[in-house]
Image 1 (cartoon, rainbow, N blue to C red):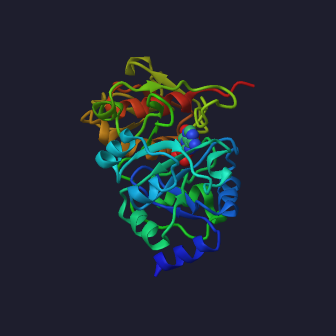
Image 2 (cartoon, rainbow, N blue to C red):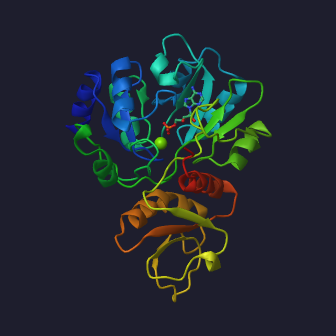
Length: 314
Ligand code: AMP
Ligand code: MG
């Protein structure tokens, strides 16, 4: 059976493609430095960008934290299993490679049934960053993982398309006040309903003070331009429009509509797949994306659009 094979590979220190509700992950044994090194190698991810450890349940996750503040338990109670990652002070046993040498570890309990089944069968934490080369578009179905990583992984578990579609929300609870490190599948509004006001960390250009905050990320190969209004998009057959809401029939270019009915959840679920399809479409030279309402999941999508459109400073 595939699950047995997956566990066998993980025990050998190999890494595999894994569906979660957010995006597909590149999963390896979270406590095995050789497996963690392989993840960084395949992704070509800089070692200063720490990994999230995934668990079947909250108690297992918290067992790797040195201290678990009451807010962490409240959030876990409300949002786990689900697309929320909590950053807490780590125990000694967590390998430095998982945390990039930081004193904190990022913990998550995913809800996807295949991820849950694998975590239970494996019986330990899995590090699982998105299954794409560093900086590129995240895969949200098994075929995209295959295109992205090809033969670099011995097995890709197929759990269908991801239904959240953007990465987990990352919340740092290691300090006095909660800090949002990354907007994601659980909205800031939902988090604040439990924690009260949350501070936001700012993305940075070079080596991040708080890792994973790089300005340039999630990027297509083609130029990506952000617009506030559809009227700003050049009316040309080779324009690709990543739209949201009603679209005029007369636009001559290629349109991918994240959600014709302006539903932010639907938009998140389609986001990376549509970016990838516009990026791969030979008829287009440049992608124009409409910024979404900056609330709920729109915030997570806008954050990704912003970083995908940022040029790398040299
Ligand atoms: P991903 O690329 O989806 O695996 O998410 C990893 C991101 O989680 C990193 O880029 C950071 O933003 C955040 N993260 C993971 N571990 C830590 C940590 N120990 N301290 C702060 N942020 C972390
Ligand atoms: Mg990623």
